[in-house]
Length: 372
Image (tube, rainbow, N blue to C red):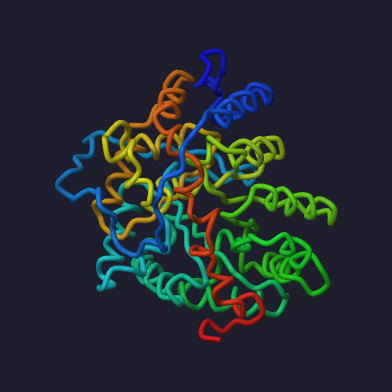
């Protein structure tokens, strides 16, 4: 990347950088040439080769979890967030409970989940982990798939029962991955009506949306919301060392969220573990911790990472404990090392339907039945 390109200065990571500088930086990243890797994968459902063992991670004894403001909500959350999907993968529920409680004991306050993760098992396990006083220590987020008012309302109620709680801090509309999704959500008897009603009833506090497919669909969702006089509290999207090289979420959506003071939830900092098999990580030119810190160095409110072992969790905690705002030279170095492989081939959630749960289970959009 040209040396004249500037990143957000360290003192502006939290407060927001100059929009012109930000767009210039990400546009330059997108201009770097790349090659497409010959690699394909389904959604990883076990630790990927290259994942750490617990003995590999030695946390600093004086480590403190950084926190950031969640947009304009008035809430402060941990820089690292615990992803919910992977909690349903270990054969024993006790492993998932240990992961959740270890995260909280180390200062992680942001909990991610979804109504459909592992047929609802991820929420049940998290709910069990949040007993014994742990619920009051966290900011609990989950997602729903329903696009109609009734489906969304029923799914919200199911989430409350699964968690064993009387309110959820943040509920997000999941998988906004079709250009028709914004119109459905905000149409007559659309999901937004159920979310607003649930907020009035005290069942939820804040409302957001997620998606992993296209920044243009994210922008359309924001535009549709604005046309209906609504502003989301949060938006979740992939932000990582591969997306940065394309006209992706970092370049096209992040500046808009900063301008509108919407909480920014970064996800897939390691591409669901797939990036571990890319040349820069296999050759240890960059580390998983640096990938996590790249996302942390953006204007993210929280960086969510999935953990199906305590070791992977501690890898994330270590990256957060050791994080300090980076300068433009550091970010430029990271992107130079990933430039040749960042063709989009490693971001399977964008280029395939492998990660599209609502495509494989279309009834999730219309009903509150997980089994169809």
